[in-house]
Amino acid sequence: MKSHIVISKATIDRLPLYFRTLRHIQEEGIEIISSEELGRRIGVTPEQIRKDLASFGEFGKKGVGYFVRELIRNIGEILGLHRNWNIAIIGIGHLGWALANYKNFSSLGFNLAAIFDVDLSKVGLTINGVEVQHVNSLEEVLQQRQIHIGVITVPAEQAQKVADRLVEAGVKGIWNFAPLRINVPGHVRIISEDLSVGLSSLSYFLSRQLSD
Amino acid sequence: MKSHIVISKATIDRLPLYFRTLRHIQEEGIEIISSEELGRRIGVTPEQIRKDLASFGEFGKKGVGYFVRELIRNIGEILGLHRNWNIAIIGIGHLGWALANYKNFSSLGFNLAAIFDVDLSKVGLTINGVEVQHVNSLEEVLQQRQIHIGVITVPAEQAQKVADRLVEAGVKGIWNFAPLRINVPGHVRIISEDLSVGLSSLSYFLSRQLSD
DNA sequence: TAGATTGTTAATCGATTAACAATC
DNA sequence: TAGATTGTTAATCGATTAACAATC
Image 1 (cartoon, rainbow over the protein chains, first blue to last red):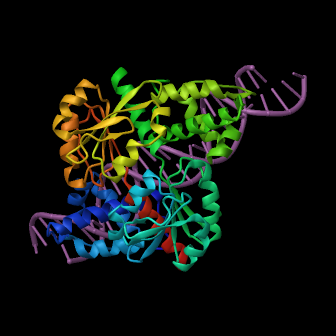
Image 2 (tube, rainbow over the protein chains, first blue to last red):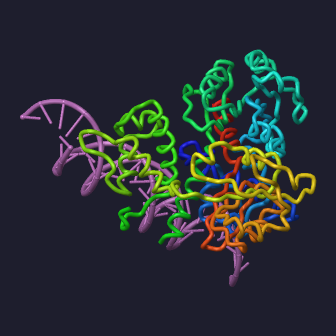
Image 3 (cartoon, protein in one colour):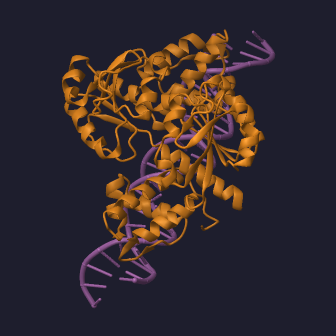
């Protein structure tokens, strides 16, 4: 990366789209692609793509385009997807269950390494090859299995407490699905998925469409 | 709304956060709140909140603050949450199952009115009070039950085809969970939730934190 | 009246788009 | 060489932050 350039959050959020689309393109047997064609597929302008990529290096060949395989490798490295991240899911409700069975994790380099719940009727179950453990052993297991990322799918009331324990146990990143703001110290990264935002904004636009 | 002002997408996406937080505040019995205090809770600057709200009208009282109950009603109306939206879920895999059981829908004015799947072993099941129907009857049921929003939780390969049928059947909005770009005509609104984006960006930041 | 807090205008910051030189 | 396409700089656009007059 060109260390003097500031990378925008928006750029980081587009890279996974490029990554995924390039993989599809590779599956189709295409070896070289232009920013024009890639942009058309994703719904992003070619300038945007070139600008985004240029923040990290020169990955293309002028007059030719981008070598698909090479670009996939480069974006993968930028996103850190070439590493192997161990993740733990805390809370096996419906959503936790769905995430525990999410197939795309492994193809992005994420390894489901632990699952926790308080409910004794769930402890001991095996989901996607991983045994559900009681949250009492959270700290112990997280350290044993070197968990990097904790996924919070517990009810909102318990989310902050779980986050505190994850941080205390040395987790570096949190992927939060509980619908509320969670506070973590600066050295821990947290990303929240808020389903009500998407649905509400859909409602907003439909209201206008139907009345205007 | 002041019709000459352009509302930014970012503003629309913050309104649901205001809405939800204000409801919590109301539950605590607080009747008046300042942008300062509300911002502190959400993690947004008070100026941001005042600016966002001001695009739609004058909801506060100078020198006093905002009346919680009134502001909830106003934001609810802006977002169209006072209406009753009928939604249908297409595809009862793990994620569809989780969404069908999502409790927050109804409190936002969304009414789960239909569920579809191709799998005959799922057809006939009742989930959260709604019977799973075969996708063959999609068009018929959508019209009967006046579905406004379709939720796509089918595998990526079938997502575009399902979207086409939803549009054809007159759905006005689509909430897509399939990890790919879906094309719809301009009069249909689509919002995509892309789980790999959040997780990948987490990976990006962790990579840097651990190596820098 | 004095203190508090909104709504709005101006200034700053950041991200996207346009243009084009470099070069394969 | 001519055509194509990148990488980069400049111009535009949009969103956030700061400042402050209005007013409860």
